[in-house]
Length: 343
Ligand code: SF4
Ligand code: SF4
Image (cartoon, rainbow, N blue to C red; front, side):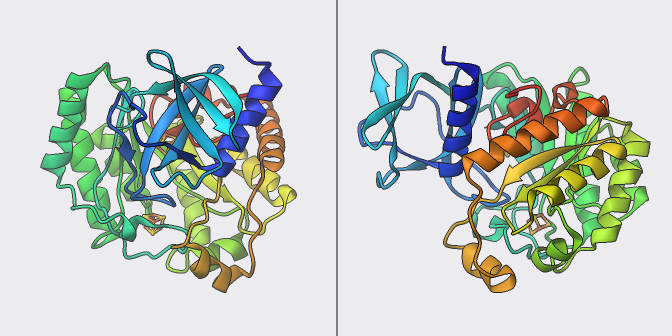
């Protein structure tokens, strides 16, 4: 196993690259995963593991990425960078339904909110009805040991309807899998919606702050309300409990590190655990984002690790930990540097 600091840096570098070349003939032992929401929606991905860390990477069948997956012996892999061995002792981890050990489904697979970084509308997927999503979760549970269930959704009609659908699915899965924790990641605009989700059986919730600063939020989420989002995170902590609420802060919109630290501290003070996520720029979202924000500098591995270290410190001071979550991104830990998991 590699030195801890070195493997952390390598994970950050893999996150920052985001794509891995998979040459023809390379055997992938499990079906690849496809994301339905967020940046990267629609792409084919795999989760790789090394040195106790995981990374989800988009599969590049055209082999344009400088990172390459190479098969070594039976079931083993390594990652090459520019043809040189970069990471050894790599495994490919099966994703049950989007994430390892977890069924994480997306109900509404389009969204009328039009956040500039989000590619949900280009995912080209059929809507999932509550019944189909339930069937998918049940089918996933037969393919492997399921450790948690989570539900997200775009807003295809109204926010209220989105919450109704998420709550209806959660109520069904909670009856079918009473021993499992269920997480919810819908768009929230009222306290009542959170109460409804809690009554349906949701144990953990993600209400996304999205950007570290209000002015950036207003530019990248032009149809959402920043103050209401913060208020909703506060309501979520009251209803779900301190430490059971998480919130994405996407970095790479032009904010500086002190903006991120302030946002992480604000959330921690409210009992919510930030999930710092690197902005993934691609041909679909870059033109929209740069039109609104000007030229963007991609977040590099050094910044990602430095933000992660400060993030971990703030959480410790506030008695919070991503390790307490059993659903959504923290137990998966494939897309971010996660305090208490990666450092
Ligand atoms: S609310 Fe924004 S981030 Fe969420 S699915 Fe809709 S467009 Fe995407
Ligand atoms: S970290 Fe979150 S977004 Fe990434 S694969 Fe896991 S569950 Fe999905």
